[in-house]
Length: 164
View 1 (tube, rainbow, N blue to C red):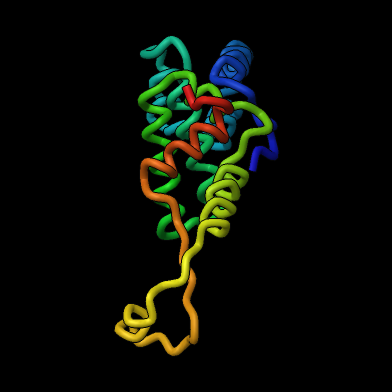
View 2: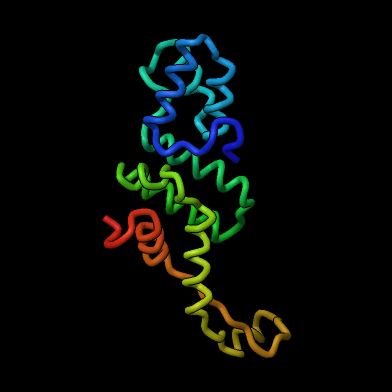
């Protein structure tokens, strides 16, 4: 995932590398580093043309990391919603964006936290609902956090403690 340039801890790390590569005239490496970190191509063009002073901010770096991790994990359905919740939290809170970008924090582990919560709180679905769904299993269990609970768990994973 971060094979060529390694996992970067912050937007500051990304911007420092971009500046060093720019000063060396290595625009191809800037493009490759940006792609590896999920930074949009138009940001790269703006940066290379001198239209913006740095390649990314905390939000852009966090959203890029989430996009790269999400693609690698090939998430579907509800897990995609959880990623969108995480993105919205990054857009609302700079600290969240910084923490998502941190080395050692991963979307995989965040999704695992939500999955464990879901598994531990699964309930048996009423037989009438199972019958109406035309499912022939003797028992169907289901568990998933609501949107508010999922956001709380995401905040706790990335921020720890109170989620603030």
